[in-house]
Amino acid sequence: MKKYIQSLLVCVIVLTFSACKDFLDITPHDRIADTGVWDNAASIKFYINDVYQSVNGPLYIWSSRASRDNITAPAIFDNFMTGDLWYNAGSIYTYSQWGKSTGLGALIRWTDCYTNIRKINNAIEGLNGSAALAQEQKERYLGDMYFWRAMLYYELFCFYGKVPIIDHSQNRNEEEIFSPRDSEIDVVNFFIGDFEKAITYLPKDIPDSELGRSTKGAAIGMLATAYLYLAGVMEDIIGTEAREYYKKAYETADILITGNLKGKYDLFGKNAADKGQAYHDLFMAANEYNEEVIFDIQFTDDGLDVGGSGRRGHDLMGVSHPGSYAQTTDGSYGGWGRNTPTQNLVDEFRMADGSAFDWSNPTHAAHPYDNREPRFYASILYTGAPWRGDIIYASTNKPNTAGTALIDNATMKRGTNSYTMTGYYLKKLIDPTKRGGTPNRYAPFEGSDQNLIVLRYAEILLTYAEAKNEYSGPDQSVYDALNAVRNRGGLPDVSGLSQDVLRETIRTERHIELCFENKRYFDIMRWRKGPEIIGKDVYGIDVTYRMVDDVPVPSYTKVLLTTKSFESPKNYLMPIPDAVTGRNPNLLPNNPGW
Image 1 (cartoon, rainbow, N blue to C red):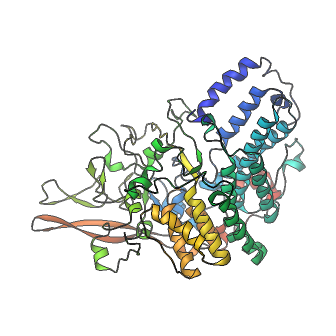
Image 2: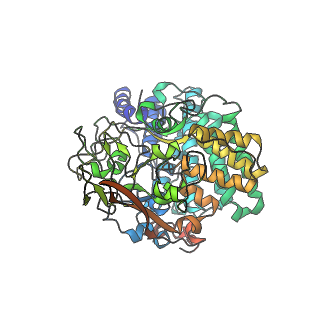
Image 3: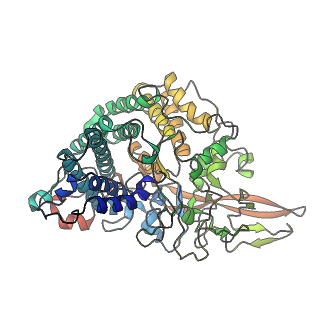
């Protein structure tokens, strides 16, 4: 059943209360969870599905969910700027000035993570002690819970480093509840152990009715990406021994490439004639559950109210659809145009022959959108790009319909409230067949129902290539993995590179292939490239026209939008929020610099 996680909840609630009359007559206990839940298969199913509903917000969805609260996060680094001018640019773009009480991004995630960890601990203990389930079903649920606990502790580690390990349901003893932080290596070993347990319990294949649930492939893939992250950040903690995580990363990724799960996943549209269209279609609702998707978050736009929002979809279309097309010819509405790609990212996309774009090249500078790689046209809406039967004009001026004069495009120009701040709009992830918003921009968005991909096979190939190159240098398997992704994106093979050159090639490929998928921040953190990437100038584009023989000819000017800062080592970790340390001073001292 499509949208298993959300839509099943209604059915489960009905089943639970009809099949178990005494469900609400559970004797109160001194534990945080009621043990009576675990005596009934229907109530167990409800509890497990409630966990799935509750955890829709960790690191993989932190920014890519595109809600009005969370999408500000990508503005920290070099992919996005936000077009909503009511946000204080200083608090968003000046990363090093974030305070411990700032309510942005990861700073609100601590409580969410531990709330869900406590739910999961209750579930693991309840499942282990339950006689209401067959062993196979019990192990399936245990696999789900170990997977999610691993994901949550992995997230906590990425943002905060040392955190308390809570692996059991807690009583009301204050000494136990207000735990101190455990060491980094203990936290790492804990979530690795949970991923390994999940791999043991989870099935390789699931029925259509369970699409969106964790699987063996999802646990293996997430463990591989975790190992790659650890290889970068743990060097500061355990020294050169951290290199062994690279070996574990490529060996784990290879299980999905040439190992026991070979053939389970593949690149979507790898043989398509139109590489750009295939890449764009990969993320559309019409192609959900395709062969590349290893794990995704389920959304539905069924009209049911969730949290007063009026829908159970996400805000991707409403927040990111070009705001300059508020009323289109087909009667649909545009969005806020809030998530606007930067020139920094646009310049990363290769030319069609695989070479780098270069502003010092007169041909490139005069025609920056010509002869670019297919993924550029699939990911970026630029001035002159076709969109929904119209042409995008995303900069200061545009020609009138007669082409004889210049007019100020006041409602669409770069920097106008709710329109592009950078001269670009987002195309990747945006469905051109769906409404972008509502007639009233302050009304609730109707919601997007496409699933948002957490992990896909292209990332596994890039994880293998990077980890193997870092551990032992280039070999044919590294080139095979990297070139498979490049070829699907329309770029030619690379070969014969040094380890250093190949490293930069792989990093650039990750930036392009995985842009807007909430990977960039974590890549920058593990590469320890904060000052070079986050703490640098961010650029946009201005496009103006001059009349040549009564024909408007565009010219392009790269413009500075903002200058950001990054303090090392302070900004490699988030601070534990003041509200949390105020309740539990055992968590102090806070992270370095905070």
